[in-house]
Length: 98
Image 1 (tube, rainbow, N blue to C red):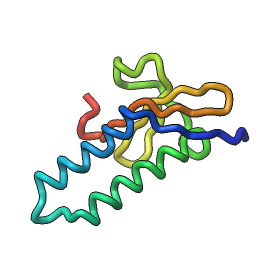
Image 2 (tube, helix red, strand yellow):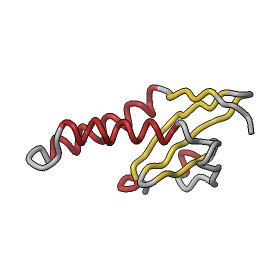
Image 3 (cartoon, rainbow, N blue to C red):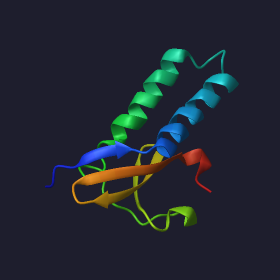
Image 4 (cartoon, one colour):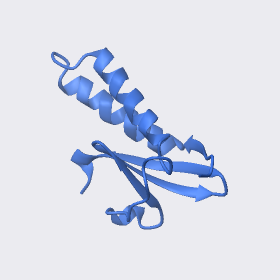
């Protein structure tokens, strides 16, 4: 098994952060700051499992046709592999997979 270095590109970081910030804003009476932090941490941690325990899938979004895709829980990731580097270029919550 190859030891990859995982890099989150700015778009992927923004997609993860903005999704949970919007959830926190919309459900501010029931979704705490701690919930938001925990969910973001889980989303980033899952990204580091790509090509380790999360295997490649065929992309289901047309905008990801040039990438590999991985899925964990309710989150999907688009990524490229260059030698020993995995570039996570986009992330999407299942609610937005259309």
